[in-house]
Amino acid sequence: MNQYEQACEWHASAFALIDKGFYQQSIYHFCLAGELYLKSALNLVSYEIELETSHDIIRIYRTLADRFGLTEEMTEATKYMRKYHNESRYPSYSIEFSKQTALDFKRFADTIKAYTDSCTGTPEDLASHFNKRL
Image (cartoon, rainbow, N blue to C red; front, side, top):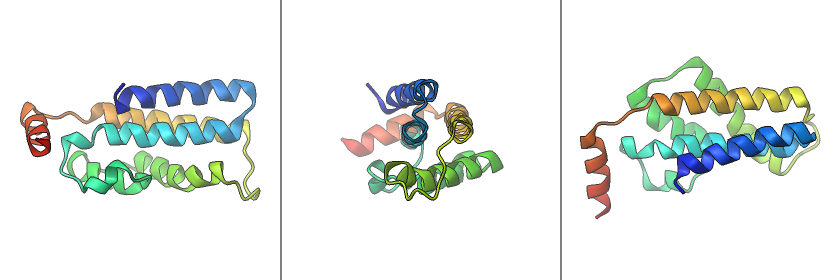
């Protein structure tokens, strides 16, 4: 299973967790989905190898944005995803994990998926990426 397919599963499971009332876990799943969506497009650009294992979604997004552009919605989504990735795993209890917050993160994940879906590479991009790895 590739990163994009994994992202789709995290995305779907996050939505299912909202229905069960597990908002904190749902937010964490949405954050992972967003990260994996963006990582799945890294093969379309030149990037620093450590991004493959990084959780710095803002840096991953900026790497893609050099080629595919910045948007206000993506900037907002990645900012919140970066902050809540850790907060949803190790909550400080100063944050309320509500259904509305989880639905906001669904919107962020949807935004990131749409952005990633709009990133398209040429055959040369893919050849260059895979030739570097040989």
